[in-house]
Image 1 (spheres, rainbow, N blue to C red):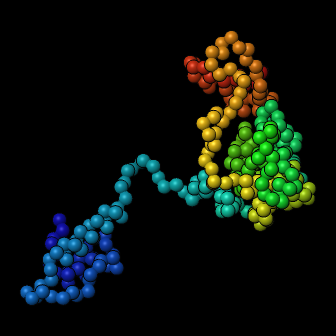
Image 2 (image 1 turned 90 degrees about the vertical axis):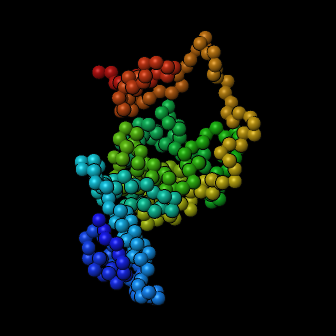
Image 3 (image 1 turned 120 degrees about the vertical axis):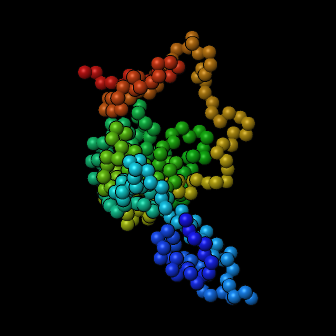
Length: 287
């Protein structure tokens, strides 16, 4: 046990005691205070220092659980810490041209998104629906028109970092995170070229991506002046499809999976529960 500290003058010696983990510069009040009339320092001061020393020792001590967990290495953290913020913080260095992006696109992206990012059975359109005036003003006019049916990704996304980040983390669908940094720059450049934001000979890099952000068609289209929904008591979607008591209705398949994407995540029908209304589409390739 600790012995009671009677005088503050004893502290220098106690600082060397291994039972007290407080370094000298963290012990407050070691200068000589005023004496009481009895000539002794107050015992309460010694008690306060003792409690401070013991509490700091408890904070610094890490619980030890042998064999359970470990600290992540710098390389492991780097592998997960890949998100890119809207101010481009976290964006890695690299570059890629439109032509290089077209080659990567044809090899890894076209099977689901089409040769030119158009609407396919597998996915919504990547580009389309924007004009040169949208690029100039930074707000896609077609999104304000309720009769607009086509709503491509490039019409809605306000920040180029979002597009880059999503491509790098999640694409291609059957092999996410398989594209290199330079390939991601190249594919992003190709998409921007399809959207007529950059020319055919453009080279996108970490050095000029902020400049291209100022040409995004919907860079000023996102606001915080309204809630998530402004339905005002009315349904925010309308449909003529049957949603209840539909046993006698004829169901039609409106979407299919492209041949190139079949079985990329195994047979979906075998991954569903054996009960309930949802059944996965058989996606196993025929042998």
